[in-house]
Length: 123
Image: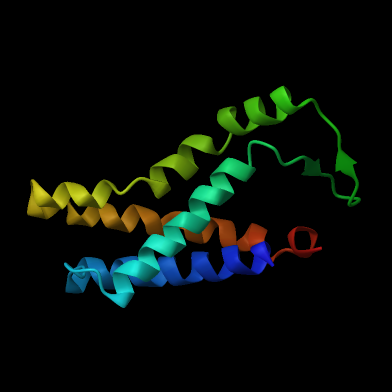
């Protein structure tokens, strides 16, 4: 179930952040802003769980590694990418309005759609 949630979150944020960048973000706690908070919560949970997830090879078999190695591989791999796309860098627009373009960084999550949609990921 969480896999489907990640796919939907990725799709929605890939579309909604460019829209809000062009048309402005909700300033009050509206449904749209609460949706963004929930979607970002999904990505935070995803970042945390990636420290514990074992890899699956092409044959569908789990590659067993010590937990320290799994976390180390994630930190050396995609952790920085995940962290930068999760951080609300666009909030710097409060200090410099031209920096609202930084919200578009969150749109690069579309990179994960291929992985999320693969059969290996969904099984």
